[in-house]
Image 1 (cartoon, rainbow, N blue to C red):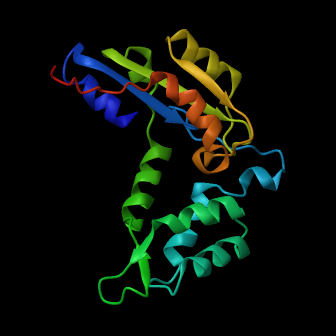
Image 2 (image 1 turned 30 degrees about the vertical axis):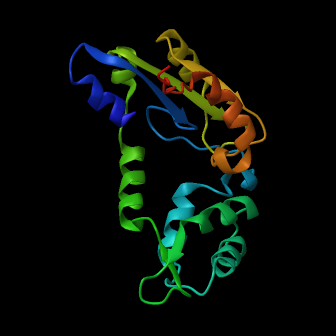
Length: 192
């Protein structure tokens, strides 16, 4: 949403259409379920990021990270997915370290919790289309009034079953089914 908001500052209209997908996130204050259902909180990024920062790298292997996360209470799926963020170190290819900037991720998440994009969504720049995907088992509360407000502003809200906040890990096929109709493929024309 931040990037789309920045595009919108270019002018009242973009030179070409831009499709923005917001995955299991709301444009305003972060809210969590308080139903007492710990499963809904299991893979929350506010819990995951500090655990990843505490994990000692370089490590011997992906299985070490996965076991650490599962023992810390995270699901097998998310733990497995997180291991894709490890790569061999230059010093010793048998050891693995992060491909991502943990400090940057922590700062980005804190920024997400602090910012509101309702003003942008109420009057987006012409040419920007924003769609939201809501995960069925998300730890975030999606109040019906927020959903109705998004729709009233002309945005679509899609429901993804059998997925928590990490929808690309929980239900990648379902997510692709929602996203695919908006994909366009540039076809190279072959001279005849």
